[in-house]
Image (cartoon, rainbow, N blue to C red; front, side, top):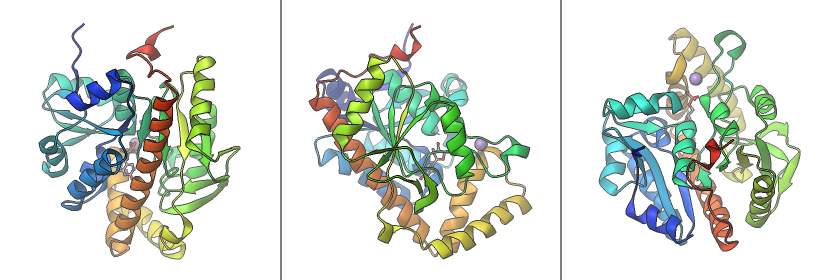
Length: 316
Ligand code: PSU
Ligand code: MN
C-alpha cells in the first residue's frame, strides 16, 4: 500500500541512523498560540532540540500529505494560514483525500509519529475529560489514541481547563502509565500542582527509558505519560488562574462554545484575561517538555534501543 506519510529528509536520516528524534504537535501552533508569536514559538521549539543534537519532527497535514518533519515554509503555513483546521485521528483520512491542510492534535500527532517509528513526543498539556463531560460526553480523543500507541509523551499534565480528577480516572481505565518527573504531584498545566497525586515518580531520563524498555518486554503497546511540571516560580499565579478559569468556563457556556472549539476558546480567554501571562507560561511549559523529551530521546538512542518499526502497533 502506498504510504501517504512523508518523512522529511532530516527525520528519515536520523531514524535510519538511530539518532534521537522528538515528535512535536502542530495544533498548539495553529490553535493554541496567537499569531505572530506562534511561529516564533514553533521555531524556538525546534531550535531547543537542534541545539542538543536531537532532530525535531513537527507533524501536520499539508495539502493532503501527512508530514513528519516540516521545513520552515511548512511551519509558517501552519502558523499563518487561517484555513488550517484542527485535525484529530478521525479527521486524518478525509483531510488527506480532500487535500486539506490541518494541524494535528496530540492524538493525531502521536499516531503519525508512531507510524513513522518515533518513540518520544513532547507537547504542552494533554487533552482530557472536559468539565461537564457527564452531560456533554466531551472527552478528548487524545486519551483513547494514547491508550493504543507505544509512545512516550512528555506533557505538563492535563490542561487545568479540564476535569483533571476525571481525566486521571480515565487514564487509569485506559491503562496509560503516568510517571511524575521529579514529583509525586500531578502537574496542572498552567499550575505546577493540580492538587492530585501520582503513584509513580522518576528522577532521570534514563529511568523513563527503563520503563519504556520494560513495557516493550511486556509487549504493552500503550503510551507512557511523563508528567513534567513547571518550576513553581514559573507557574501562573494560582489566584489569578482560578478567577480567570471560572470566568472562562462561564463565557464558554454563555456563548455556546462546544466540541473542538472549546479548548482553543478557553486558552484564548486565558490569554486575554491574564494580560498575556498565560501565553508566556504556555510557551515556557512546552519548551520545558521539549527539553526533557530531547533528553529522553537521547537516552533511548544511546541505549541502542531500536525504534518500533512503523506499524508495529498494528500486529496482533
Ligand atoms: N497543549 C497546549 N496547547 C494546545 C493543545 C495542547 O499547550 O493547543 C491542543 C493539543 O493539540 C491537544 C488539543 O491535542 O489541544 C486537545 O483538544 P481537544 O480538547 O479538543 O481534544
Ligand atoms: Mn472535545
